[in-house]
Length: 100
Image (cartoon, rainbow, N blue to C red; front, side):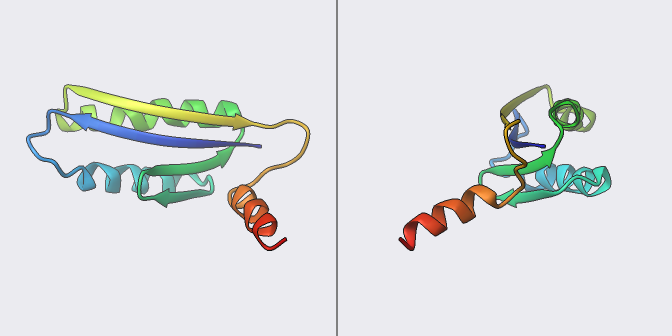
């Protein structure tokens, strides 16, 4: 499995708020069936790298359907093949080290 951090920023909406667009993307993530976590600065999603990259493309298209003319999409993908990773593993690893 891989982890992806995704931030989608619609530009030129006439408002400083993007909450409406974030809510639309979260609804689409619910339908995807992939595990995800919304953060203050983006969304983390778990899946195969192929699934995640396809999903990123689909989600990046969503603001255009509402008339947005420009969208900036930032993707970080961690595709680790030596062991299985899941959402929360990195946080748990750091928390364990802090207790030492």
